[in-house]
Structures are given as C-alpha cells and as structure tokens.
Length: 621
Ligand code: ADP
Ligand code: MG
Image 1 (spheres, rainbow, N blue to C red):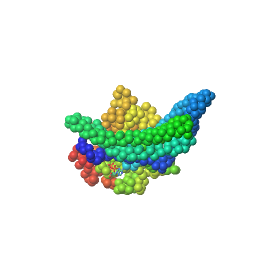
Image 2 (image 1 turned 60 degrees about the vertical axis):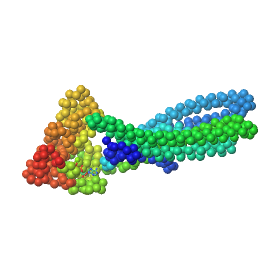
Image 3 (image 1 turned 45 degrees about the horizontal axis):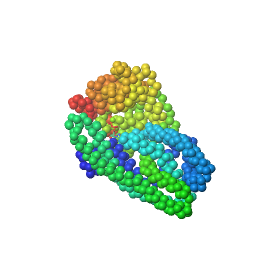
C-alpha cells in the first residue's frame, strides 16, 4: 500500500511497469487538448481519407442535403423581414399569406432533410469507427514480436479504448458541431452585412469577444486538468491495487487504512476538479456573455435607427435573429475545438501503430515448405536482439525426423530464442535455419507454421469452449480429430466427464481449468495440426510436482512417435530424450544422451547432481 501525500507528484514509481505506461498515456492525452493547428487538421484529413472514401456517395448526399438545409435556413430571416415590412406594416394580405405558406413549407422541408442527414451520417460515421478499429486490429496481427516486446500491453489497449473513443466522439459531432455551425456563421455574416453594413461591422466584434474569454479560461482549465488527471491516475491505481489486494486487505484488516488512503486521494482530487470545472464553465459562459453584450449594443443602435425611420422594423428583427444564431453557432464552434484537438492527438497516436513496419514478411518468391522428410538444422546460427548482446553464438544443431531432442540450460541461456528463430519470430543475425535443406526465410510463413505445433509455459487459452480452443490449432478439425488430439494429450476422459463436454467454456486465459488441464488442452491444440515438429517451451514448468510428473509421462509417450523439441530448465523432465543439448550463455556446450552425458562427467553431470541433491529438479536454484 503506498503512503499518501496529496502534494507529492504522481507516485509513479510504485506502479508496476505496464501500468506506468497506461498512466503516462492517460496524462499525455491532456496535453494534446490545448491547441489545434492547420497542420493537425491536414493530418486528420489524410488519416481519415482512406476510411471516408468508401462512403463518398453517402457523404456527397450529406453535402447536398446540408446545402438545401442551409439555403432554407438562410431564407428564414429574409422571409421574416418581408413578413414584417410588407405583410404586417404595409398590411399586404397576399404577401402575408405567401410568406406564411413559404415558412411552413420550409419548416417541413428543413426538418425532413435534417432527419435524413442525421440518419446518413450516423450510419457512415459508425461504420468509419468500426473500420478504423478493425484495421488497427488487423495491423496488430501483422506486427512483429519485437513490437509487442517493446510496447506495454496497456499502451496498445489504450489505443482501442481512449484513442478510438476520442476519434469517435469527434466524428459523430463533426457535422452537427462543426460543419453546420460553420455554414451558419458564414451565411449569417453575409446576411448581416446585406441587412445593414454598420450593424454588420458591430456584429463582427462578436468574434474577438467570443474567442478572448474562452482562450484565457480554457488555458487555465487545461493547465489544472493535467493535475486533475494525475490525481485520477492515482485514484485509479489505488482502486486497482485495492481490488487485486483484497485477500491481503481482508486478512490484515486494512479496510480502514485503505479507505483513509482513498479518501485522502479524493480530497486532493476535489481541489483540482473544482477549479477545472469552474474555469471550464467560465470559458463557456464568457463566450455567451460576449454574444449577450454585442446583442444589447445592436438592439440599442437598431432600435434608435428604426425609431428614426433609418431602418425598417423588419430589418431590425431579421438582423437581430441572424445575429443571435450566428453568435451561438460561433460559441458551438469554439466548444468543439477541444474535442477536435483531442481527436487529432488520438489519431496521431493511432497512426504510430499504422506506421510500424509489418512483420518479417514472406519473400516475394517464397515457396511452400513441403512436409519435413529429414531434419531441422541450425547451421552456424548467431543472433542478437535488436543490436544487443549476442544471445546465440554459432549454434549448430540437427534435429532428425522422429527424434526427441531436449534443449536444457539455465534460464536466460538462449533456449527460447532458439525456438523463436525456428518459428521465424526473428531472423538469425548470421547462419541459417533450414528444414530439409531449405532455408526457412525462403518459404511462406503459413507453410512453415503449419508444420510446427508449439506449447508454451503459459498456455494462452482463449475465452471459448475447449472445442473452439482446440480448433485454434486447426480450423476445420473434425470432432473425431479433436477427440483424438485430446486422447493423445490424455485429457479426453476428463473432458468427456464434464457436464458440457468439449463445449465447456474454459474462462479467461483458461482460468476454469487446472494448470495441468490447461497445458493438456494446449498440447491437444498443438497436436490437432498433426505437426511435423512438436515444440515445447517449458511446457510443464509452471505446474506443481505431481501434475508435472504426470504430464511428462504423457509427453514421453507422444515423443515416441514424432519429432519433438523440448526446451526446459529441469533436467529430470528429459532424461529419456534421444539427444540432450546443453546450452550455456548462447553456446552449445555438450550434447548426448542422459547416460553419455553423465559418463562424460562434465557440465551436464554437474548440473544433474546439483538438481538431484536439492530435490527441485531445477538447474537454477
Ligand atoms: P531462456 O529461454 O533460455 O531462459 P531466452 O532465450 O529467453 O532464455 O533469453 C536469452 C537471452 O536473451 C537472455 O539474456 C534474455 O535477457 C535475452 N532476451 C530474451 N528476449 C529478449 C528480447 N525480446 N529482447 C532483448 N533481449 C532478449
Ligand atoms: Mg525460455
């Protein structure tokens, strides 16, 4: 539980790394709000263009409907002027009737057109948001492993939540809060000058009046809202920590203490929140005040001129209504600016993902890898992650078809890296990985991956049924194939005994299954592909001793009839392998069977004795 000091800067050091990124992202958004420039708008337009293009017909129709709406709207004040001056003051019955008929028709037309417009753009923009979300997801599928290793997951997820929502908010409001008010300001300004040049000039004063107040007050609100968001991040962290730590909170009687902590954080937040709200509303009301003041000036002058007969009453009334709607349209526009700025910031954030270079792609002349007949070979393979230290040093390794090869070594010695190179998550810095003499860089990734079934330490089951999880291994697997895979993984009986059988939902990350069951399902998922090579990366390391022993017996049976590469830091798991490869700091130091290696009395034998004496079966204890 972190201690509380309301004046301290955001206590980010207490937060685990992933959340750290979440929160700084959370704070960054605020900075994006303060300003917006023409180049940002240009960027936004370029970003959105590919998503808008498919709907160009709909958008063109929106444009036509908006034009109709604007023409009618602009004709209202002219009609009003005519109604008063000709119809009422001149008592011209025909003019009166004509104007009234026109106004009622126009009202109906404008309403229908407006509803139609709302319908079309709501549909278009909800589709645009959907398309952006899908293409973001699609792009993620193409990105290489290094991207996921260097980008915290919270940071990626925030693009789906924060950034897409900010863009969505902007898009749905774009027409009603930006385009419509903008058209209104344009035609209203033109009409004001048409009605009376002097009043028009005075009316123009509303621009600086409306812009001044909000720009001062919203700057103050923005500055404070950064602090407000920091407190919110603290509150979020405290709540999250508390929810996760409930067992500790309950067991140690920390309820009061947690509550006091949480209350303090919130009191600190209130101080900032209150000022942010107050300055934000001052920003809005100062804009309205600007409209209000100019409005009074216009009424005074207009009334004076109308009284002296220098201006018709109709003109005064029409001008006045024109001015009011222009003032409010302008206010709406200023209030849309933060939404717009936030959206452009978010789109830039989204764009970072789109600009990432996609994964190691298939060579243009990539061939389809034929089913393995002889062997997998690492030939002089050296590798370093992203210009870092050498992780694999001239590794030579042959895995013959049908053999059971174990790769053992301390954690950090480079075992998983060997598998990553086989899967082509990365390419070697030098040397090559070949299957039957074919460099895996020259084959399609799909045909490579089709030959490999892999089981990780963490099984990554999806929140779906057992059946669906197995079918992640082979989409069109028949129920018989699924059953066979589950039988080979020796979990068929257990699954069949469940009330829903293979239809049983496994829960988030397979949480409703035991650790051993999860790994067996993961093994079945790998086996259902009927892979040429079964690869296991610490597949049993996370299990308790009994489940681990049971699963190892299963794996030994499976290994008898296929090519298996089993990577582990626990020697006791692999004593019966055809070949044990001992790797240390990226170098293969010994190879041989368990018996040969013991007889050699080298590194392996030493490690074996250590593990036997401490009883953990693990090298690095
Ligand atoms: P093992 O599986 O044997 O425990 P790894 O192959 O995962 O070891 O790691 C070998 C070395 O490479 C370690 O020193 C590790 O710190 C480093 N390493 C692993 N993954 C990465 C990565 N994505 N970026 C940089 N270094 C890495
Ligand atoms: Mg590893």
